Structure formats: C-alpha cells, structure tokens
Image (cartoon, rainbow, N blue to C red):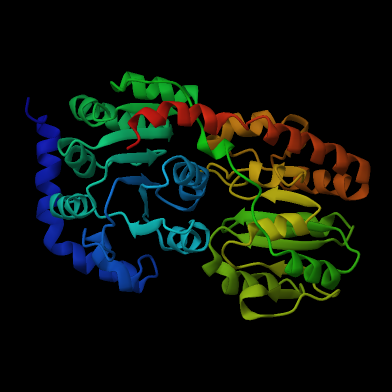
Length: 418
C-alpha cells in the first residue's frame, strides 16, 4: 500500500526545501541556535564513524527530554553492554549537557533535518537496530525510512498536547501511517493515550520517563564553598526560569522581609548577562556566576547562568521555586529534580505538561496564582523551619514512589532490543 497523499506531499515539500537548508542552518548558527562546527550532522552527514555491532538509537528533542533519557541510556549500557548507544537531540544546550553526562562509549549526534536526503544519509550510516523516541518527536521521513529498513521503533514517555492532536487530526491517514510504524507506544499519561488512540496509535501501556532519575549531581567542594560564602542566610533557588518570571520572583522574595539570598538558575544560561543588567536596575547587589563574580554575604541575588549545575543549586537552597510555571504557554518544568533532594517546592499554576507530577507532590508543593500568593508562601516557609522540614519530607516521599517506572519500561522494551 502506498503512502497517503498528505505524506507524499510532505516528502515532496521537504525535498524542495533541501537546497535552502544550509543557508537556514547558517543563519540559525549566527543566532546561536545551531553549532556551526556540526552543521553537517543536521544535513545527515555524521561526524563520527559507526562502531561495529548492534546499535540502539535514542532521541530526545531538547534538554528536558534528553535528561529523561539518561536513566534509560544507563539501563541499556548495563543490560546490553555490547551495543553502541547513539543519542540524538536538536538543541545546542542539550548537546552541551549530554557532553557532560553521557556515559563512556555513548555517542551524541544532532538529529538530522527531516528531509528525504538527510534522513537517508543518517539511516544509511548508522543502521540502527532499535530506535527509541521520547515524548513528541514524530518526523515522518526519518520514521518511515527507519521502518523500511527493518528498524524496531518505540515511542516511549509519549506526550501529545491537544493542539498537536488537533493538528494531526486534519490528516488522519498520515497520523495512522506515522503512528503505525511503532512496535511499542507508551504514553506518559492517560490524556496523551486517548489522543494517540484517537489518531490510530496502538497503546501498549504507560510510562513517564520524567518520573525516573537519580538525584542530580553536584560538586561537594563547590557546594561547601558557596555555603560558606553565603553566610547563615536562608537561600531560595529559583530554577529553570523564563523571561518575565525573574522580576516577579525577585520582587516576591524582597517583599518577604526575611532577606534571604535568591539564586536564579535561568532555563537558558545565555540570558544571564542581560538578566543581571535588568535586575541591577532595581538597586540589587548581584553576582553573575558566568562572569566569575564572587558570592559574598552582601550579595542579594546570585545568577547561576551555567549549564549542568542545577543539582548544586538545589542543594544550596532551602526552598525551590520552579520556573516555567508562572507564565502561560510554557507548561512548567520537572519538580521531581528538587523533590528528590528533599526541597520544598513552590510553583505557579501554569504546569500543563506536568499535571500528574505536580498533583503527586501533595503536601510537598505549594501553588501560587500570582505574586501576592508567592510572597505569602515564601514568607511563611522562610519563617517556619518545621514547615520547611515537613514539606521537604513530603516532596521526597512523592519522588520516591516512582522508583519502579524504569523497570516496567524495560520489561516492554527488552524484547525489541538487539
């Protein structure tokens, strides 16, 4: 049976765009959105040889997805030590993080653009035995090309928003064909499961990789140094913040009247210098980590604009404020990273991507609709060490309940593994 007309047209359109792709990629590289040294990978021209033997390809789009893949990478390394592990992603920040955290022997490449030529070159070079896609990455040329080569395909921890489902529903034959390539589909929640079923996907259970994970790493010597530099003040860590959230959180902390140290860890570290300039305009004493500015007892606000140090700053803080949840259209970020380290979690009320996880936090988290509620929540926690302790224990308990997810996922993946 041939491809539905919508996919034939998609393939033709992406082929027609191919001559313009290098120019587009160079423009993105100038804007800091691509690695200029590795643009060839985006065109399906790998920068590393393929090792002999079986190969498992795992893909996550950006930082959150690739971090959620790491426990699965470790599981494959333990259970299939003779297989090469290839991890692909699409952003420079995810590539930098994976360079720090991938185990020895695992390879990273950028995902190629979903043009027929780039997909063909990538698949011809790497010839994977199994491909595991995480969350919502559905690239027709890559997926159909892999299936045609006999690659086993799994979509795990799948997430599909209502908007994406509505978009795919306009092309029902294409949706059925693309979802039909997968040998295993495991959504991360019931809502996604229903959407994928409605589009023609065969659901085989549920698994959310973002509920899995070890405690984020940290340099203990650096943690001790920062604690000594901060003095005896309480510390609020605002993690993974986005533009517009930083002044709101800083204002709320200031209004508590408790004079804690505020540490801001922006979701995108490149924002650090501008963020420092903007917040200094409000007469705050600020230190910028990327510039080597020291943390002192006089520092009001420490901007930790570095990559891969979130575990350090969650440990440093007494309270975690989760960014991505105070503005609409972001969807929130993973609160379990703070909860695993037994930190009380304070958050906004915009966390559509993490509804089940925030719900499971229970007494380990407190939600705030606006700056006034955030100020009140922080004021209460800063003044009451027993309340902080109870919330921390509840957060840690909620995080510990998800320990079996990886085992259940592996049971379903193992029959497909080379």
